[in-house]
Image (cartoon, rainbow, N blue to C red; front, top):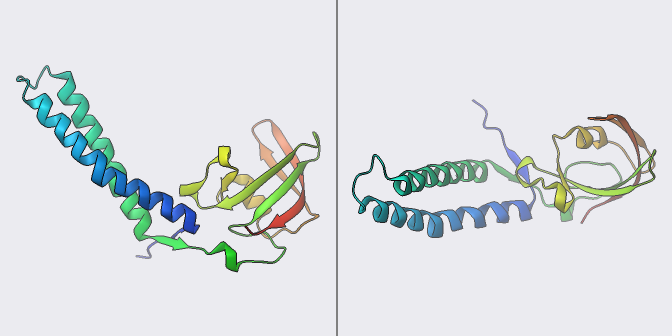
Length: 159
């Protein structure tokens, strides 16, 4: 079986590593303390505090396992070594909506570090897939929930 690599930037890898450390060294002991405290209150069948703490523990342990898996399969792509005018993973692309003239700047990153509020979209998103392989000056059309949108690529950068 082939292990599927998870592409990410160095920053994305650091972010996941920091979250994992926090969940293991801060959240885990705190939750264990909550469980012990709730357990000391007696009857567990009607102890909402105990059940909430166990639920939180389950969620935290699940996320720890997910982070460990993603970090183990991480394929760190050093964007500083990338260049050129063809869009691929790690590129920061400036687009202009052909209908509204609104400008948008997106960096194409791995799924685990995608965050629209921070201008990072997943390489697997419809927009990113439309952009891959294109160059500055090209126009791409993407099916959006409200219908087809056309964008002109005005800049391709590596930062």
